[in-house]
Image (cartoon, rainbow, N blue to C red; front, side):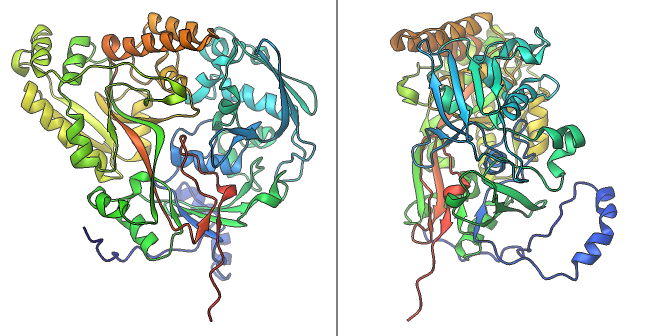
Length: 551
């Protein structure tokens, strides 16, 4: 299939020096705007990336989206960071660490040259305060469950322990951080590279509260600072001169573009206005076959799953027979062959095969006769009397809508069940999911580290990312027992038992397929980008290569 000629994209505006979240704020800055209008535009950035949708937040403790996380990681760093090639943990703000023989105590040494972008030293007390902020229930961090491996992390998150200082992290001196774990956790260093463990500026947060991310100058602990943010256009990042590894941050300025249109993103890339399109959703699915044959479009395996959430608190989805009936009729092969078309693998399990050496169990396979009987047993023979439900999805790409239409037709044709489609913009989508304001909802999860736990702990009863209303003490027990088990075979057996319970008894989700990564980049033009299992592409490693001199 031949690619169409690029559609003229919307004019690309140069970033300004301020961003605005409300008309009142805009009016407050009007005099400054008038002054800036006479200024020359900023020079072009060293590198221009298309990152997908507009970030909901760049607070690393609150963000949940992958696009948000890429920017959060550029601005704020933790004790470790991800290697751009292997996606394994490498030293970040900590230059080294020691692990006790029993695997339960980690002692980190902060770098002597670790500093905020303001030049103030970063100390171990900053780490302790940041962790306490992330785990504080008042912060409402969806990823707070990642602290459950730390002593008293779960108790604080769930409110049974109110003293934040009881969290198992301490600062015996300005450069030493000591962490106490509940059990040995082999993936703990990778866990620390995730955004919710990033070090954030206490003074700015205490002074500005929820608006701290807008403070100027914004103190950053990562390789970049926030120079400007034009909403629904771009964020400009500038290399942090006080970053401990500033000499190896390869691009001085990076423009991170935002937008919901896959066609616009592709056209910006084809016209040369964008160097790198990161988000796999930013490609028109109808062009998947043609794009995949181009040498500058790269496909790779990574740890991600696409699934449907079911709100287990709403009737009739509170009946597991109804949830199983829906799971038994979904047509995964049709979805990946006719809609996604990028080599995704249909799955009946949650954890992608091979994650950390783990092989997941088989979930509920298609069985239309069984599904019809289950629905009849639940009181809806042939779908009669079944209420009309809503299927919610974020509407920035056609892909989610096409999958929604396919699922809608499948339920109607096989079970006589009618659902209505509810497209949402990204922030409403996340908000409705968090509030359980939905019946069925398209969902996905990208692994934060290469271990099955990064998927399975989503559905702990107290997990902030559960968002299905499903709670099962036996599932919690199996996961907790697995995480206290050192012997790998026994541990994986327990995790398989937990996942089996999730997929076959609880059924708060319907898995559809596991992801493949896909990005657009000319490796002769941009270097430092590598496909990896966690789909991690840190900005500090990227640079545009000099153009060959004309003869």
